[in-house]
Image (cartoon, rainbow, N blue to C red; front, side):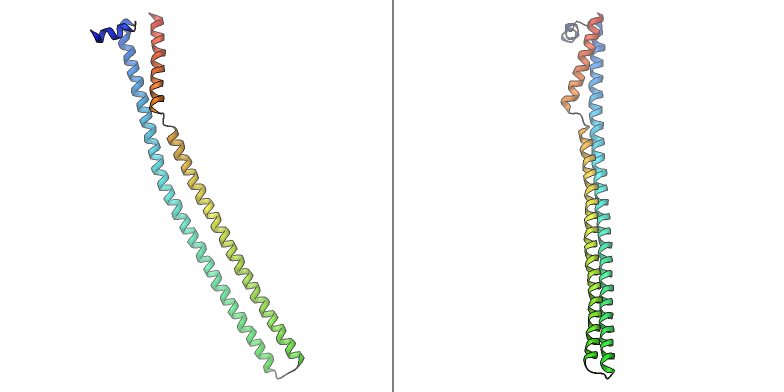
Length: 188
């Protein structure tokens, strides 16, 4: 008797079972949508974890390549410096071996030393420039990696923000039920 009294108490008469069926379907639909949004958010999270690992691996590989390039540049410039020192010593030796003496020889030796120092300094400047460029490149890679991370975090946040709260889902069901009740009650 209580089961029959409930629908009749709403004043819907024979429309009460349809009202309750509609209300139940609305509740099932709201919960299904919520679960689907949760599953989509979880998938976005998992995809983002994979993408983040990939971004980290790419960052490490690119940084390693830049470091290897700088190392090769340093080795090459060290060889250039050594070659310049050897050429300078050979030139000084040739000047001294010429058998001349006096102020001219001193000037020639000083000029040779100046040329050698200038060449070594230009090599040092190229090395410093390469080191600064390496640091800028690493900063660029770091910014690129951080940008990718931030985008992934944003995607995760957006996915989780799409999940309706349980209270929101229940309020929507109640709102639809109330609207349906009003329509059914008005037609009676």
